[in-house]
Length: 221
Image (tube, rainbow, N blue to C red; front, side):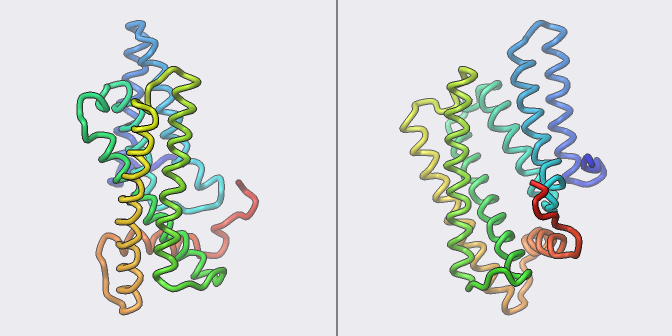
């Protein structure tokens, strides 16, 4: 089911899709086939995080889904097609730092779900360490994705090769560290029943929705 355009996260997702749709149509009419290709590829990759969780029987917080869509749009479409990687020196750093923070918090929410389902028992420190490892692992997978895109489609997502890749991984580690620290503070304050505002809302949505009866569908993926 597509996101509701009435919700803030839904508005962001539909805005991204609208820009990509207009780019594809404009490219078809003007013969800019590179724009058509990049726009179509980005559109497909931004649809995946919207439909995949439901197919796997998982409830993903809408804010997380919107963040993934925006990250994909900023990386492939704006970074590559609009050449913001070259125009703005901080673009790549900002994207990797933000994504590592978000993925780290996603790792925290995943462990909270498992903990609430009595499948794992762990202290806040161990949970935050898992969040760090989870975020860094996703960062490594992304670097492999960049390498594959460069090899298959002739893009230049890795820029200077080894230097760019190692720089990205270092930034991923820094972002993951930030996420694990935030996750640790959240877990400790949660034990004391001290609210954390927006972070509470996002993580609680993920935990409660995924712990309801009938939400998960083992083997669906």
